[in-house]
Image (tube, rainbow over all chains, first blue to last red; front, side, top):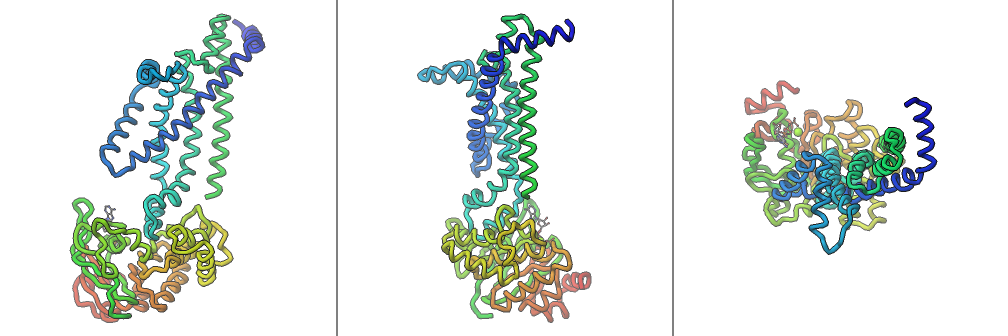
Length: 227
Length: 245
Ligand SMILES: Nc1ncnc2c1ncn2[C@@H]1O[C@H](COP(=O)(O)OP(=O)(O)OP(=O)(O)O)[C@@H](O)[C@H]1O
Ligand SMILES: [Mg+2]
């Protein structure tokens, strides 16, 4: 296996299977990641609110949930989703992609809830006190004073979560959902060129995450400047 | 100063865990009065002030504002807070709003004024403190003294019946202390009922009608400025004053 032969194989693979890698793989990976982050953010926000509620059992529930998600392997969670979700909602006839998405969303929600909670708690307590001292209610204080400042902490962290998810969705290829890592499995199966396929997929993952992390970085710098 | 009692506390008690920070504090603040509170660090001055607008919930005792006991279940605390302006040591201006928005937020949100009225009032207040040209700036462009003056007029925009100041100048560079004290002095002279926690003894003497000396969660001594500062009766007051004067 020489460098030139690898290079030649890569070019061959790309010209023959570019649609498998770039069209199918990248789009499914991005779609899966976007679904995960968006739904995860909504669910995570809900969890963060519950975690900050005055009701102790509610807080306890969220803490337990977050700890369980953090403390078990993602792949295991995907297996659980794969088996459990279709059983729980048989009427919906959910396929593998949907079941895996649900598992990813639940996983991400746990992490995002911590991102949101710490983003809110990083806002100086004096801000909330000043708002309350003017007579604003708890909700008004949250909406008008705390959240607009917390968003600056939360958005970059969410961007980074998106990048992490892009990499983690590769685990979903275990279930052949059609993501970028599944492309690798398909091409490898058809050509037996495992190493070359891996390099292609690796480069695409890297380009995706690298560009995104540069974008997040630029956005973060812009937020800093407006402080 | 009138005879009407605006704020009264009765045997206020507050603990943080095992630490008893307020140990039965009873005071009266009369309408139009300027009351200064002095005392050693950790003596409970801030905690006491924050109990007045219930930023801290007292463990025992009463807070009575305009004749109503306000520290009980079922009171709409937000309503009362609208009438009690508070100024903090660290300004706490809202960094994500312009200077003008800082001032108009509460009056418009709480429907105390229409947006047009609130703007008019904000511009008037900014003019008064010489920050009119900064109305569209964000607070990060302001000096410490300007931020604190903004914080003061932000509270004034709600047209409160009393102003609570918690060491309003102690986070400021020395050259900016004067401009903030001048504003507070002007308010007091205009008849604003004020409770001022301060380490500025000269200012307390000059501006207040009465000074309370607070230590270890209790009012150790109180009196007219000249009496308390020049002829303290209690040993603890004498010790404290001999250190700071
Ligand atoms: N939220 C809190 N939790 C725990 N302890 C607190 C809290 N707030 C105040 N304390 C403690 O209560 C005591 C009184 O604090 P307080 O801030 O009222 O004193 P102070 O007289 O305002 O002092 P300073 O002049 O330093 O501002 C201190 O020992 C302080 O550490
Ligand atoms: Mg204090």
